[in-house]
Length: 177
Image 1 (cartoon, rainbow, N blue to C red):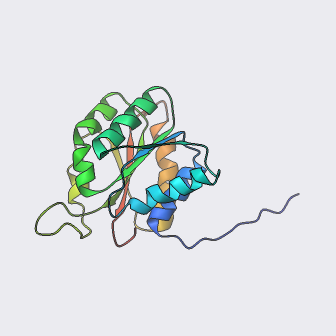
Image 2: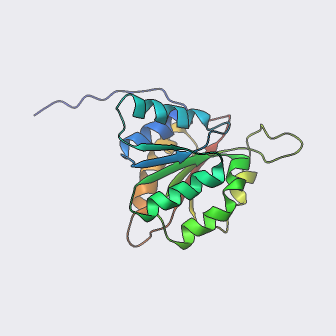
């Protein structure tokens, strides 16, 4: 019997997302960096560059394009991931309904952030609340461990033939990210 070796890593939630996505062996990552989720995309790019993750990274010009690319990839059967925050999520709004209407098992993480005035560099859930009626399943995590676990669960839920809906995993931007 071989001894299992575990390694503990102190992670913030953005790195927890990246490690969970890597462990889920995704096929396509389509993302546009936006604070406070930028390090998610950076870490995933690093995994791909180092050969730790065999995935296609699609660098796009906007969040609308990121979700559009994710929809295209998921429509042909690829395990797909994207990440965003705040105004980026608002730019994706039209595509949120298309993804759920097509019942595509996309997983997206959201490092939540305030929208607009007076300043939008605070953590709140105003970005996430605008997606309430977009028919995405929403999981909200309260620790980096919950973020990691929720991303894995999100793929299990989204890809279940009885469900087949996109899932978003949200966590406190700036505080946990």
